[in-house]
Length: 255
Image 1 (cartoon, one colour):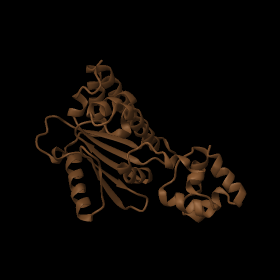
Image 2 (cartoon, one colour):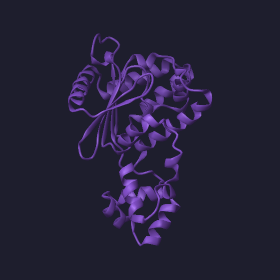
Image 3 (spheres, one colour):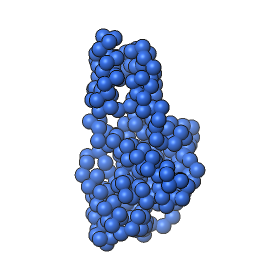
């Protein structure tokens, strides 16, 4: 419960409905800010704080001590507001679907973080997954190269649990996973992973990751190229059901 937001509403006479109208969001969204403690998008935080005549940090103090890297915050805002997410990964399970043990192994294995920072980044990564548990979750479509299923990240037990968790996630109607079989030769996925987000206004943004930091893509020509790559990798992949069967089968080989 966000008691600071509730107190500000009571003192100013705003209701969830009237604040939602002032900020330009659905009343259910303000309800989630109150009951689930969700942190709104930056522009909504600004508008709400102005309406309630409060400093942003008085209502959402966690924004001043966020755990994710500064360079990742623009994409996290986009991810949080997305209506749909299309993700291709050629090396690891996407962060939104990683188990804690798998995510920890990925962060430690990268060798770029001091050990003292691993827990902080792990907490931030797992917290991102809450968008898939909302009442209005984004439609998440993931395409994985089959090599992801066979790479021993974290050891046999971690891989077994991760693949079973991945298959279980696919039971949700808003999560779809497709696997590009190892028998496929050259295809667009060999050029690296990427994510495409579409917001409720049907605007798109892309995300590219590298060894140092990620890059948000907004150029229309670049987005068109990413959509072409998406159609290519999606076209090479198995169906959702075939992919879940394969993931489950490979999970047993790790047991």
